[in-house]
Image (cartoon, rainbow, N blue to C red; front, side, top):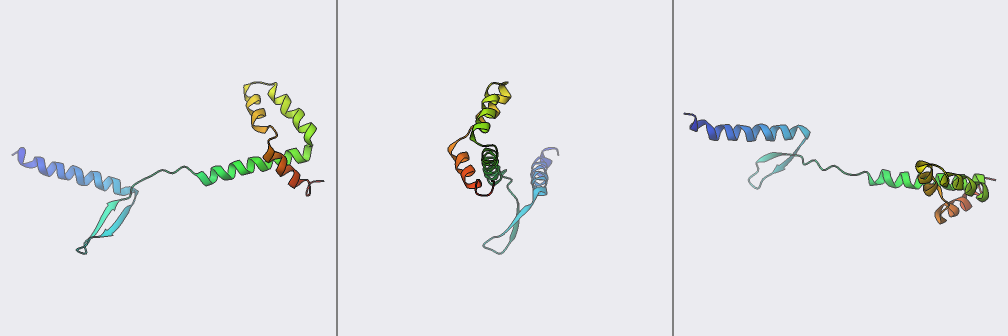
Length: 114
């Protein structure tokens, strides 16, 4: 009697597992014979590349604004002070150093910022 329930229990476990996966959503498809079949939606986490690109562009714009507002000499003095500090300040100095993109953005902003 116990062996008669084994295929049923396996099928029941498979149905419950599939039902739990369908809690995230389903995709309905139509077979060649016209039967509508619901299958669980596959979850694929994606890294927000657009958000990362916006963050990098905003960082360069911020650096360019500071470079244009403070001037090259004062900016480089402050970055040199960061390089002489702790490990975190050295990392900030490495990020904030005046690269060609920062200088180019600052030149464009000098028209707006007197």
